[in-house]
Amino acid sequence: MSEEEKAGILFVCMRCGRKTPLSELESLPEIKCICGYRVLKKDRPPMVRQVKAI
Ligand SMILES: [Zn+2]
Image 1 (cartoon, rainbow, N blue to C red):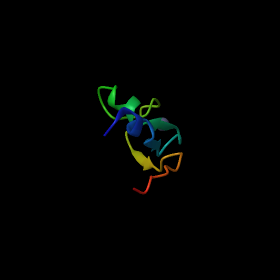
Image 2: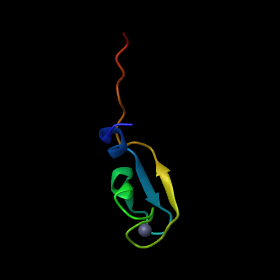
Image 3: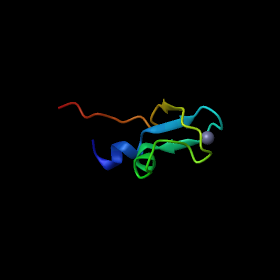
Image 4: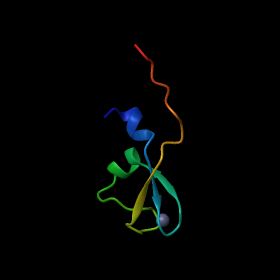
C-alpha cells in the first residue's frame, strides 16, 4: 500500500469523533486518538478514485 493510499484511509474516534489518517496513526507508538481513546472505526476514504479501464 502506498503512502498516498494510507493518507486516504481515515479512522474515526468512537468517543470524540475526530478523524485521524492511518499514516498519522502509524507514526504513533500505539493506535489511539489524541484524546486517549483507543476504539477507532475505519472510515471511508474522503474521495472517490477513478480507475482507468484498460
Ligand atoms: Zn478521540
